[in-house]
Structure formats: C-alpha cells, structure tokens
Length: 310
Image 1 (cartoon, rainbow, N blue to C red):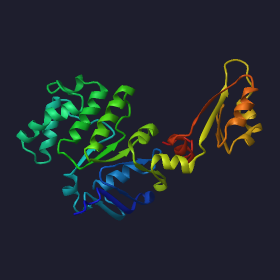
Image 2: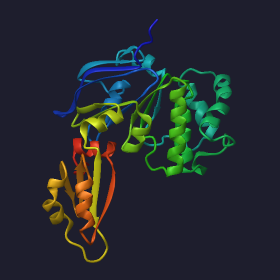
Image 3: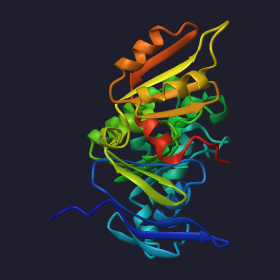
Image 4: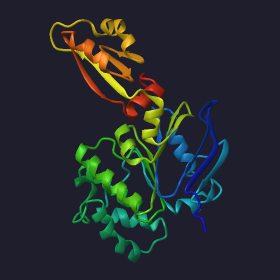
C-alpha cells in the first residue's frame, strides 16, 4: 500500500483584517525528504505552518497532514508530528529529563515508555550525561538540541522546524545539521523554514520561495540556482585608502555583465563569463573584488529584493 503524502497543501489562503498574508499556496512534501519554505520577514511562512498544523484556521484551501484533513482532524494528525518552534519554550523549572517526560505525556505515552526513550534522545542530541541538568544551566546550543530531542519524543513521522539554528554558533549549527541529516536517513520527513540559505542548500531536497504570501519559485536548490541566476558573481568594493567611487566605476562597466546591482559602496556583477570583467578590474587600482559561484542567497535576493522587511 502506498504511503500517504506527509503534507499536501492546495490553494491555501489566509487573511487578517483584509490583508491576505497567504495567497493560494500549493505544495506537496514527499516522504523522507526535507522541504524548505523560504521567504523574507512577513512573507507568510509562519502563518502557513500554523495552518498546516491546525493551529490557525485557513480561509480557503485543502490541507492534509499525515494523510488526515486539517483542521478537521488536526489533533489526530499532530500526534504524528514533532515541532521545533522559533523560540525555545522549555520549562526552566524542570531538568532536561523532566522536560522530555512532561512533553511525552501530552502524547499519551506512559512514564515507562518515555523513560526508555530518554537515553537515546539525549545521546542523539549530544546531551548524554545532562539528564539531571536544569535548563538555565544549558548553553544556547544545548537548549536548541534539547528542543529538537523533545520534538522527537513521540517518534514522529514529520518534523516541523521553524528557524531551528537562529542565534547558534557555527559549531552548534553544524551539529544540528548532522542530526537532521540522520533523521532524514531514518526516513523522517522535515518541513523547514530558515533565513540561512546555506542551511537550506545543505538540507533541502526541494524548497519554495514565497513573498507576500505567494510562491515565486519552487524546485531543488541547485536547480533554482541554474534556472534563476547567472553562474558567476563578482563583488567589487574599494580597498582602504584612495580609490575610485565604486558605483560610478560599476556603471561605466555594466556592459561586462548580464546584470548589475549596486548596494551602498559595493557592486554585484552577475556574469555568464567573468573573464572580461576580471581583466578590467586588474587595471583598476584601488578596487578589490571577490569572484565566486552564484548561490541560493543570490537567488533569494533576486526573487525577493534587498530591501529590509519588518
């Protein structure tokens, strides 16, 4: 028998005070994959996740989570789901083990069942030996890993991760990435929101970029980079000391690239062949540059713009 699609969304819409924040989103998440939902602040990501989990009622559209219709059977669907929210909501009055125990009871698990799982969960989260530690004594990375362990206490089929590594140092981020890859290797399905494009590139087999509640692109990370952006990027900026104004120099040489963006005193040349531009830069004293391959962040900025969002 074919397994149900872990999450399928069709024509999702949600408005607040006449402002449509989710405007007809449709996507499906295959089993055992990581699906990324990317967008700037206010794009509709969190509202979409809340609708998918049955925490917010949609105005229109069809949602099936773990094969069950949401919000009608949201309670039953959520029993097969784990959630890591944006902010840590651990109970500071409990020990590490007690946080897992209390959370597991919400799923109807017995104390014995949860107790049997705790050592494995703590080992998975890199918290072995911390069962009796209280939450305030943990570092930020430890708290985040405990939140991930807690989301797995019911052995969920699907894990929702809302910006799981925000505020963590590089070591903690890499450790969480490895743990998430291990979950995928075990056949778990992950739905991820993140503002770190390198995180999405590493983890997601497919992703959707949304803006103002609408999908603006969807596909595998490498596919989107090939399809949406020129392959080479040259960032031009001034060296310390006397240097020609970068914006003026860039505008005089914009014929050496397919596309030019100027942000403050830095010029971004998007090229199919960077050789002519690099030759021109070699004869431009006072200018420095970084030549690199295009990445998912370049795609994201092209599709959603560079202006700040509140």
